[in-house]
Image (cartoon, rainbow over all chains, first blue to last red; front, side, top):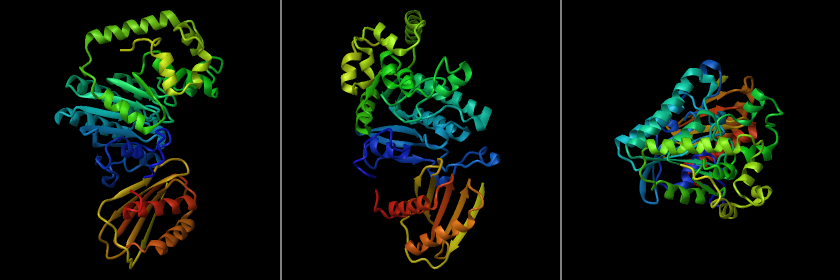
Length: 299
Length: 104
């Protein structure tokens, strides 16, 4: 693969896997040649993918054995169908059985694949359960979010169930996507074609300032790799009541402090950022220097 | 969706055993799965395409491909979402070159 291409955003799921882990170390489970495809799309006369839009397997990361999954945003926006979800669940469960130290989820998804209806919804909820079971068993689960489709819907929830989220400025993380909000609540509420607004609201910098992600990096596979290595060492991995209470308190504080505000620029100003309008122009390192002392604590 | 199959006999170029997939099933794009498989020296192609009614174009593209590479005992499976003939040809070449190790 071309070594000069280092953009995480521009890479396909398979390119991310190949470039992020130790060279040549990735071994795929259920590779395309095994043709485990969606049982639903064919009935709808829709195109299928031989990997159902997700690559799963084992690899070395800085010499340590890890499991990894990468969603392909180019196939149906990375949406989760029955097989796609089952591959994620199987990977997480196998990580528990084999006592793997960490699972990396390279997420890029609009959420549930609506074509597959209830099977897709059930698949996403099973992924959430599997993430929490893996954490309870001592497996660190780390999300990387830097794809152009963002991480939305049910996969946004999955991401927030993991130990840590690493984002780029270009990455996005939210529940409802911009078009969904506009459709449901009107263009006065949210203009999905205002790209600056969309990224201010769902992009990596806002998520970092609000404490929703734990690290922010440039759009570079190498930087994602370094941040992933650090995030995999998080201990303890399990979700405890104290952490949930802390999260609940943080969310309550957020609504209290920012609930009446209509634009992230106001929130950044309230957090003490002196020039909020300059935030979108800063590169990752400059941004972290400004944001780290002012961001909400996160989990 | 339309399914098209082609078979080209008497190939001369053998492939290594490791299957490869290139491309993504996205709008105007396709994925090509290429595998080494014993079939009496032939190269077989199965295409599932979202754009029905382009059989003659596919046949011409696949004939050109076979003339370029002359693969033997090869199986090619394609999931297509309306890629243009030029994109199809490039992906097919990418698949073979990846398989032969020209691209790692």
